[in-house]
Amino acid sequence: MQLPNGPPDSIEELLLRAEQLAGLTLGDLASLANIVIPQNFKREKGWSGQLIEMWLGATAGSKPQQDFPELGVELKTLPINHFGAPSETTYVCYAPLMGQEQTRWLNSNVYNKLQQVLWIPVIGDRAVPPADRSIGMPILWRPTETENNQLRTDWEELMERISLGEIESITARHGEVLQLRPKAADGSVLTDAIGQNGSIVKTRPRGFYLRKSFTQQILNNAFA
DNA sequence: CCCTGATCATGA
DNA sequence: TCATGATCAGGG
Figure 1 (cartoon, rainbow, N blue to C red):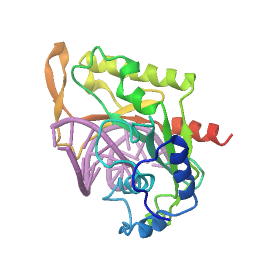
Figure 2 (cartoon, rainbow, N blue to C red):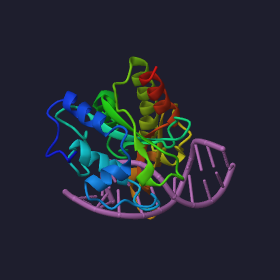
Figure 3 (tube, protein in one colour):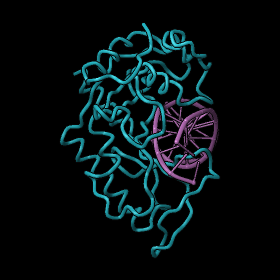
């Protein structure tokens, strides 16, 4: 098995590539690609995601779009614990805090990224060394009408609060399935946001995340 | 700084 | 014990 030369030409090919990774460990994939594997993820938190990107032929980078734009597919690894449940929330995208008052759900970055996601389960608790965590069968997911409604409801509420200058009052407790949390290198990073009475204030950058209960349901439905 | 890939560490 | 808030690495 070797690394692909470029992105897959079709969703079928993407799925085939993903299925061939199932059963292998992150250690297997790292060795085959001649990559040094970390002992833990205290520092290289995004390592497994980037390794899977390589093996599926995703273009590396920090583009605010889907991983496979030509296929309309977003790629996400999903850490799974020994109970078969997600062990972390899932980052979706950066949250706009300025000038988005008129953006609607169907034009949002969250909607765009979540309409078709290839989930790659990575099985192993936090105590399991990255090298020994294994790849599960991929899940190509498209949100149901119900799921899209849940996402839209949360997104609209959060965006309304942001537009009203209430960013500092939003916590990760808001949102049934989608939450807003800090997203930055550290607490010193600040960006502009709408403040009270339409003023401009500095605040920590935020990102949208999917709650574990939501990704758990995706797993349940996929293997039902 | 913006945004991607995420997981860590601590308080409740 | 577990979710929130904080943090790590890298390209642009």
